[in-house]
Image 1 (tube, rainbow, N blue to C red):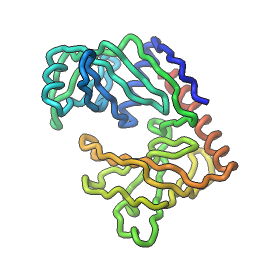
Image 2 (cartoon, one colour):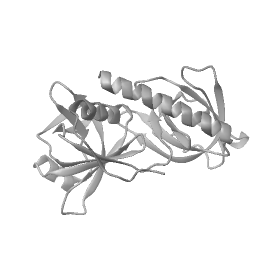
Image 3 (cartoon, rainbow, N blue to C red):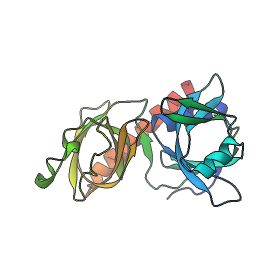
Length: 246
């Protein structure tokens, strides 16, 4: 059962690590302007520990962009490894440009709030391991570019996973609606897995030239689910150790 209690995080090292994790995971964040129904999605582009600030990709909505660049406060909401995360009273202190567009410079928040809502814990492999994934499609979809694309595991839970597809172009199809098979080997293990799965969602990150495709595992045996749950806990411990060292 998920713990719906809201917790507050104030440790600066953990906050800095979490922001860096959002960047490495290409996680979408939602900006909300208090007192309005205005909201937009964006991403963490870079994190600077030395300057105690991070950069957010500028939003496409011109009205919200004008308000943020004018200094209007906003809240930031996202998820990290299955945990809902929120920061209030954020504000841009500068707007900078790079070759891909405008970015908001935001000071590190002094506190974050989080709630564990998922029954199955999820863990990112970014910064831990690179796990190649091959995708077997039904015969009628074998010409789909995803079958020969360079794919890696971005995160995993006992329910499903997120697969990253790099440099495949903006026209990569959404695979197929029927079940397919994901093949990968567990990091730090000789055990190879072949899991039936279906596509839940996909999105293209233009700034990173990256597709992220979410899969839900199908017909897992109790033994396989237990194996995945143990593996996720192991990776969570490794990620926790890495965050404390950082």
